[in-house]
Image (tube, rainbow, N blue to C red; front, side, top):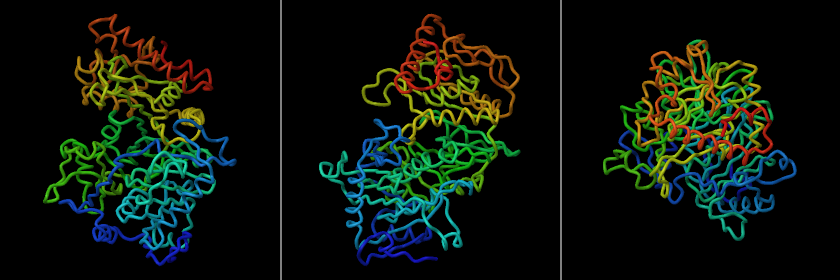
Length: 524
């Protein structure tokens, strides 16, 4: 295996470089350096300081002639000059002089045809443990000839000077697609590394004709894949964790001519209020080799998953092999079923509806769910949330690029697409109970099995989606929310209000979207 020195990274000094250390060695290093402690199950517990989540306002893309016309510049994809990037990079390299460095050389993309090689250089052993577990780990033989496609430098201890460096705070996440480099400064939150890899793949894969997706995916016994899109709180993890199917991955995938493949080799699960009875697979995955971020533990090392005193965004990073029914390697056949998950707090979207290809592209681009009253300061009633492609912060190109690719994939494969409302139906949140999970599971099972392929449907005149009149193991009377509302006029007003918000969001964000997609949306 090639031995790396600081000079390999243009770093001066005599600092020690550790390359692809084994998990026990990384844990030992992190403990020796005072980066964390062990939980009672052996997980490494760390606190990430000021940054306990991603910092979207501190993310930049280097604006170079080679990429300028391919990036959808705006509030999410913010440009920074190449000169500023180079200045920050050189200061980071100087900061790292003489320090111990932890290098992980790994892969993103479980399909070998589309794999990208990422070299991640860490200041902290605990962050190197994280990315070791989250990416796909190479064999010793693969490391002998390893050359990176992209290099990520993560130095939480390096603080930017906004007025000098041209950034917004002491933290900065800067992607240079032309030089194939990523700088992560000032933040110890490991999710920045994970999502930087994803942001790179969301640029690289479309250029190869591959659709990148922010989704979970599982696979049946006959090799068919199912894909689940959904924002936080919609049930993506819960519904894709099906004991009758194997988990391909929980968050990031590519869709190629070969089928669906996991971009990652691990999982990054939220831990807040984690209970064994609700999510046993995640609970049992928190063991030696897992990194726990911002989880409070007692004097005996026992985690208190209900404690949100540091953040509600507590996290566990572990290899996907810690999940008993994981599909390794993370590849599956062509998807037969696509599920878009939403939690509609207004109670007007059907519990399940079928979408044609144009409808699917509309809802894929919209990425709708809703936030509940009380979840954030100032929210006194449900509010709409639209996140492009169900993952707006991570997609550098115009949304139409990804939507068009999805449309072509649907035409090629004939996959069925369903919109599943895991929220409320028959009244707004707080006035009626949330949709019974038993029925939601039954609807998803019916969609995956093909049981909804030949049933009779009716077109909803407001939301322009096809509602099944029957579904196995689900009472027919709950399938159409219009029938559940006690006040027909109240339903009509609430439904039209939400449809109007769909239309306004679409018009504002996607003025150049093809007319066939625009017309496939709700009718305000």
